[in-house]
Length: 163
Image (cartoon, rainbow, N blue to C red; front, side):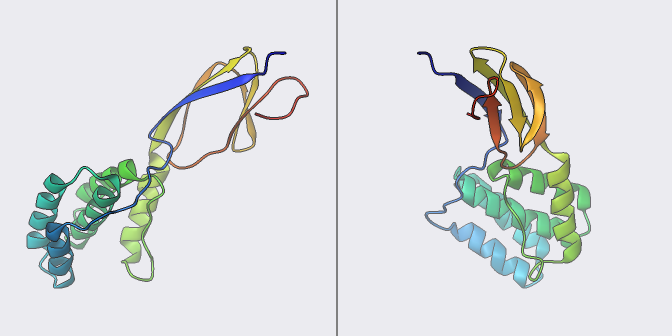
């Protein structure tokens, strides 16, 4: 008996674990300067902090704070770019609306809605009906763009159970 196989490739769709093992002194300086209202100095510290790490969780936090700095300067295009980089590190990133300016929170949410990831879905044997988040998207093989974030992907052959 051959079991059906469902394979897929995800680009910028699944969340990267955001565990941060250590904090960057330059990031902490950036936070302090931001809290003191020294936005230009905070941005310089945060740009330096980017050079210190390749860790996705730390990059997420750095870019989120950079975006808030740009938002404080009303440079919303630059804030969107920084949010996109934070979402690249962690597509599930968010801001606490009770601690962050609601305009900046809405800006992050609008960037999330515009970003997509490419999903390539194949099945063996071919011809499985594919579902993304419970909605039928057609028959495998298939390539599609989906909004950034977590999604439930399923494949079904005939009346069989989902895989």
